[in-house]
Length: 294
Length: 294
Image 1 (cartoon, each protein chain N blue to C red):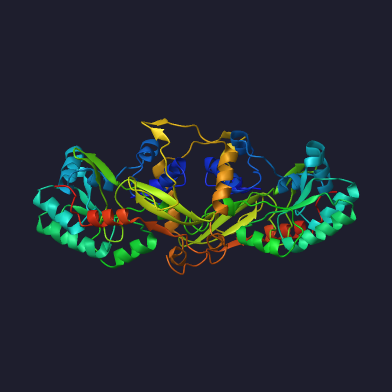
Image 2: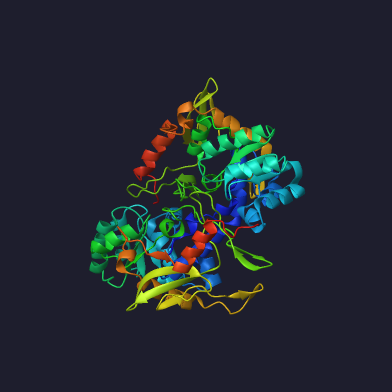
């Protein structure tokens, strides 16, 4: 479940991050507006302030359950996590899940699971959260902790490892009387690659092997599939946008087709991207400035 | 000059970053909308695409100067920086400044300064940009390079060293029949400090020494100045917002009053923040749960 609304860089960014997280494989979002605007499944639990605003923890749980019924997910780590699980059992509440947001998540989930099972709440799931990222999730899964779901916020909604996008736009061609003329910025260390381009993705036996960046008018490499196509002509879209679930499926298929080495969480390999022979030649020719200006 | 519009996390973030950069001491912004909305001085130069879209560099410079006149800042690093400076001199252009956005900024600025001075353009300033941050600016200043201004983008508009803000809100008090009751979240490692608060800033001989976080109703430390005050009552502002320049002056004064050690770019000291004795006692009392609920 995507939980990142409170850490996004602006409310609009929170919405688009929720959408991107769902496309990338999250099951749901806690952002109700994102659910409403994009049709993403919505899921969430109470806040610590809900628990603290009541006279005691049990009253907070009981009132929440009175509103949300069997779908309730109760947040049990405000004071003493295992004691809160015992309280739920002894009060006869039957929440869909409980959430633990702090402390030793592997140890607490095992202790809470034991309390719930002993209280005939085998159906109640355990959701954990609290500054999780892909590495902590992988470690918790590897530990065999009895955790049914993960709420991830900051790490999915912000880019902790790449807080700024160093991409820039540069002019690659200009239309002159003689036709389209390829251009490049030539500054040392900041050269650009000239000309209109196509990107070809090359697979073998269903596994993506490399991308080849080529000039727009050359033939692609054998077995290559072009990734760029025209979606707009003179400012007017030429086809309608695909449905959210269709984009999600395409994303899932594309990621599954990447080599295992590229998809590893640690020591990942770099996905190979090459220039085509034609584009390499064009780049050298423009770099020599033999067709720049008069 | 704040140059970060193209790297901000959304257009709205770009506007607020431009405002924050001006408040913190930048002289101007390249974000025209920020200038219009907040009254920040606007400054900027052409894009590389302006140069590349013309048949040659000199035509690009001449046409830009025809529009912007003596205020023009010409971008000279698209192809060959020093050659572009010579071109400006030999064409008799008199721009307000030239900008170098790539390469060895210290070396290029010295070479460009020599060309400009030899061409009687002593008044033409040199502005540099290109992934600058406070450390690169400090190094360029220390090198004695003849640079008159810096355009900083990514590093001032995004938080490369802190891409997410780990601050959270927690309930600190709730009004019950008996009056306001202080509350705290007690989870191990995630405890909160209970009760309504005031922050006191303590100075000696004009230099800020420490902040003391206290309960809202206790007396502050000797010489302390309270930092929090009520600006809204029942949803209605009780005073109008100060002018942009007044906020900028307050910011400058507050930063100047901080100890040198805290303001250092490298190996900076941590500014001391303490809990008052009353707040510490309250925190221990609520931590003992001796006034939590029934």
